[in-house]
Length: 239
Image (cartoon, rainbow, N blue to C red; front, top):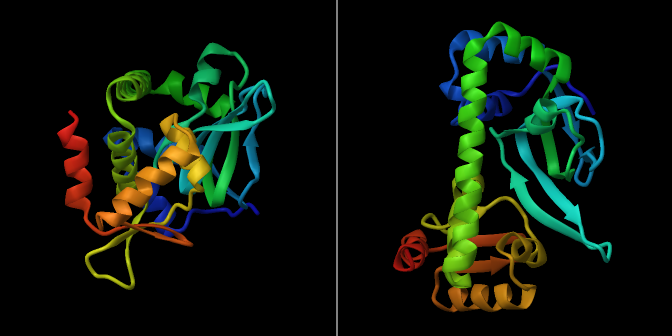
């Protein structure tokens, strides 16, 4: 499954990542120089809870599903790591073991930096420390934002916000409608519900209502957004 180099599309996903693109050319060069590519099939495990941290990882294609297991043994999806996003550095910094399971969602490509190389780059680039602090700060802000949304926004607004987020990362033009955008990341309604902290039944009800309002269209292969302005209006109305 391993390939020696990234495809043009995968390299663009890495280089255009908001955080990675902010680094100096020399730091980006040193990171990419020691990184290796891995290709994964849908469902492949990338890391398991309790594993020692052996590498720093970036998603270059597809998605990485980060999950936890409940006391009853049910898998709960916490988030999806999108192309251009780096993760796995917290365990390297604090020396503790991985806290969650990570699986490939669909055909997925990752870029990996071994822990020893990660620490070597830290020792050679003072800039890298500052960049990692910015990355951690952004994650903390996002986490607070998610908690705030969960406690202040109704499910309809949280769903609209999540769909708009997925559009930015996985939106592709619909072949059947020039104005519509299809979300290429295929999520079961149960998985979408877990991201929103709601039941599948309630999420299904909200999706059906949005479909009746001609905001989205539910297809066997996923969701198609028909009216993005209406989706944004739902989000803004509750902020």
